[in-house]
Length: 145
Image 1 (tube, rainbow, N blue to C red):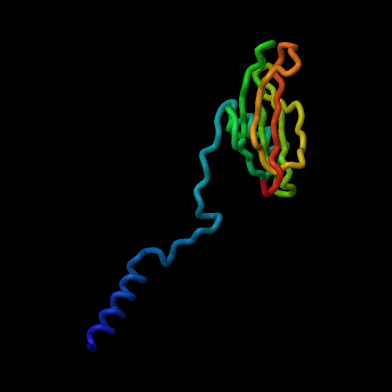
Image 2 (image 1 turned 30 degrees about the vertical axis):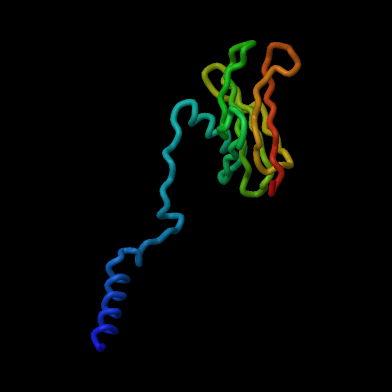
């Protein structure tokens, strides 16, 4: 009978000391950072950072064919490459959309727009007015929906 409490105490002591979890810290300094983008992706990322500021969260469309927070596409009419980027900033939870164009071997922001929604349901590229040029349609998602 005296051995049972002693064995339980030793077991608990060994479990807590030898588990290796006692000194693990999950602060910002110890978290892994994703790899940095290169090439065109790095240029686009820099433009988004300029538009959004240093702290932003990319927003991913939940439905449809285009489910990336940054969608790169070429137009059929003039073969120009564009990127559409969805994000929210640290200061504002609204959905922001930046339209970026590849022009003369560099990327430039054509404009950034803010939407009352807080997420993206879907993004559609389609020629809705039959002018031979695709338009970007995005369906914002209201907060909590």
